[in-house]
Amino acid sequence: MNLNRRSFMKYTASTAAGLWISSCLPDKAISKINQTVKEFHFTAVQTRVNLGSGKDFVAWTYNGQVPGPEIRVREGDIIRVVLKNNLPEDTTIHWHGIPLPNPMDGVPNVTQKPVAPGETFVYEFEARPAGSFIYHSHFKLQLDQGLYGPLIIEPLSETEAYDQEYTLLLEDWVLQDVGGAAAIRRRPAGPMMGGRMGMRRQFPTSQMPLPEPVYDGYAVNGRLLSAIYPIVVNKGDRVKLRLINPSSATEYYLSLAGHVLTVTHVDGNPIKPVPTEVLRIGMGERYDVRFNANNPGKWLLAAMETGLGEGMLRIPVNYRGIKRTQSVGPIFRQDMLLANYMDFTFANLWGDITLPPDRSIYQTLSGGMHSSFWTINGQVYPETDALRVQKGERVRLIYGNHSMMPHPMHLHGHFFKIVNPAIPPDMWILKDTLIVDPMQQIAVEFTADNPGKWLHHCHNLYHMEAGMANVVHYAQS
Ligand code: C2O
Ligand code: CU
Image (cartoon, rainbow, N blue to C red; front, top):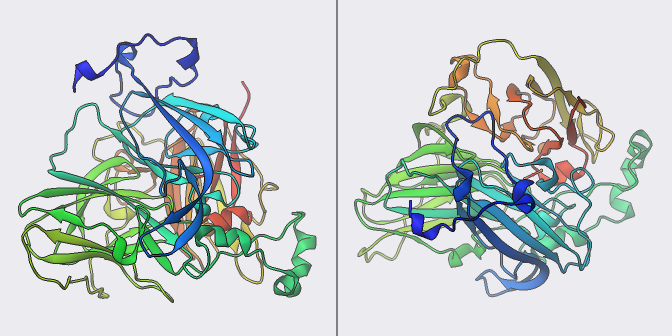
């Protein structure tokens, strides 16, 4: 830690709203006297962007960039973001994964009044805990138009040893149209919905939700296809990758040819390192992985082809000094090692979490069949029942997915632990986004230690917009 770089600011009433210490995270006592305010200025604006494919896209951006500027701070800093809205519609920013004070969470009409065109809003909160996060607009489908970026919180004291670090945002784009914005433009006209009009009577929503667009291009850090910047390594390097999925509706199965990836963090939180040949990453998830550069060559870190037009996500991994022109990509096989949630254990022990939870709530996820809506317990947001909790309770959410699609469920304002019957509760991993597979039942638990109204939803943006969301309500005390 470089003390010289910290300004010894006294924090005053203006910063008090952003100061908050998680009671559920161990080992976090630091002196607040040393807190540094890191200020960022974001202007949300429509911009023409070129992703390296020779074609311009009309995107909605922060400061004209896709992805938005990297926020990189140190654990315990105060992040202050001054957001100016130059878009033609309302906007907000959500700090995905960070358990911050409720008024800073950026959910329109739940935690704040949306920021109107021309207006400014100041977000301010403490950067905690360390890890890889995302920020993104939480207004309608704006995430799909380019309003997202990486948020990295470095630990106060680094315990990991690595030589290089890359942050990689995996983004889905619509090439045949005008980029992410195509989704908004392609509002289906009457005929497409003709056969489904009957559904409208069942659901009192005024507008039919938009179906997800057909993504046919994948970008990494705002660079498409062959324009994707390579990872360049020296033999012997230990390389850390922060893999972040801000895609609206695409999950990836990634593999690095010639190497084994070791998963070290899930949604920012440390786990006992687990090797894997394939890594699955759903929307809203983050994985930190490491590999040892011990196999000189030109390789690809690539996504498996899972559908039409997919499989174009290829990140070159080039060793310095290798002349070969052709890169070797991974070959996906049935028998590859694919680590999943149940293979992970938390890096530190939690302590005595052995009691049954105070409250269990079933969450049946369905939709998609003969319906444009996606539901929780048969209901469409905002008509979904609230998840009513009391401060201090340990709450178990039991998901049952009755649909044919995976749903990456995300809880705002809290981390949850993934219930894993095979290991003691004090080893359960901590995440904020969890893929619930078709026909799967899986449960999470969170401690209700952060009062407010918190959105809980599927991170497929189109499922969220089509109803798959509800709100955690704390009882007033
Ligand atoms: Cu990244 Cu409510 O989500
Ligand atoms: Cu979903």
